[in-house]
Image (cartoon, rainbow, N blue to C red; front, side, top):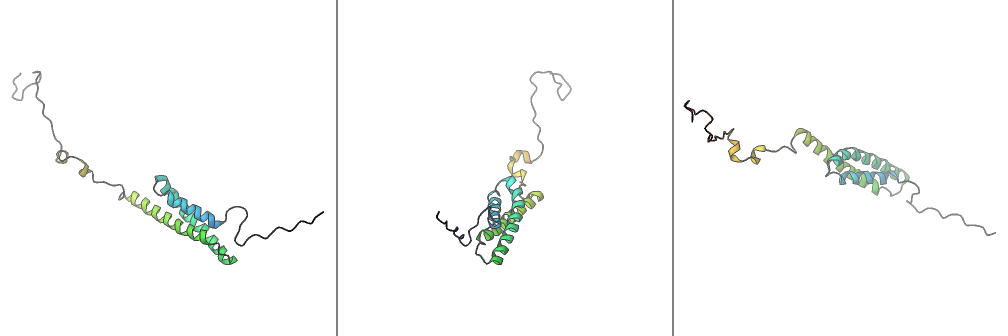
Amino acid sequence: MAASSPPAPAAAGARRGPAGPGTKAMVCGVIGVTLLPTVYGVVLSVLLGPAARAFGLVARSRARREGTGAGRNAVIGIATGAVAFTVAAVVIVLTLTGVLFSGDDEEKEPAERREGPSVQVMEDRSGTLPRPGGAAG
């Protein structure tokens, strides 16, 4: 029987198993920024932004503590999470205060309608309505 050789050590920075917090931070941040143009995306970005920042800070501190250079995804997650949260929060505040979607309805209406209520007078051709002077048709 031939002796089997021991498995080779993992390369520096290589991970086995589920994604680390740096990758989670990057995914949360990128999804938060990508969904910003949608209504539900703005609400989700308020949640995904802080999550990306938290995962990113954990991953960055872990990378510094272990002395590895695996903090690139963490930095991307922190940056995109901050952008997603900030833009979403500004959009929500402006929407709630009515600044973003308020419009001047006067500009959309024709000039005749801006002057006030108008009454359209129609001529009675049937002869059944009384005349203003009291005499009938």
